Image 1 (cartoon, rainbow, N blue to C red):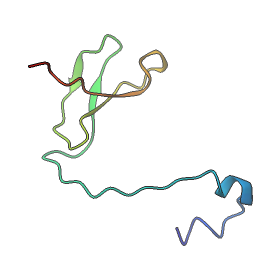
Image 2 (image 1 turned 120 degrees about the vertical axis):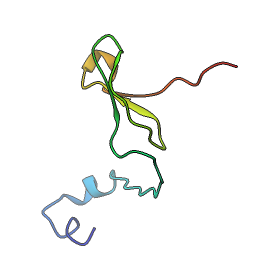
Image 3 (image 1 turned 180 degrees about the vertical axis):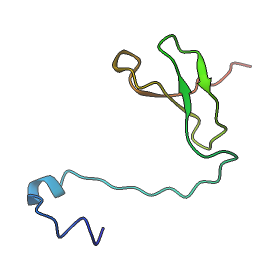
Image 4 (image 1 turned 90 degrees about the horizontal axis):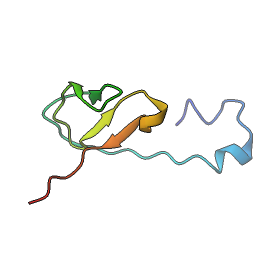
Length: 69
């Protein structure tokens, strides 16, 4: 934050920025990656369990569905 705030950023923009930090422990580092059909190409066991596709029509990132019991 000390490096970010002195930059030439308009005050109205600063009011619209929220920065959060979460300290989480995960078995793996990174994010699970999926292709355009939703098939997992790179699996990661992380605390947040998000998937990254990089595809606009797949919403770029999404939460892994919780299995029904």
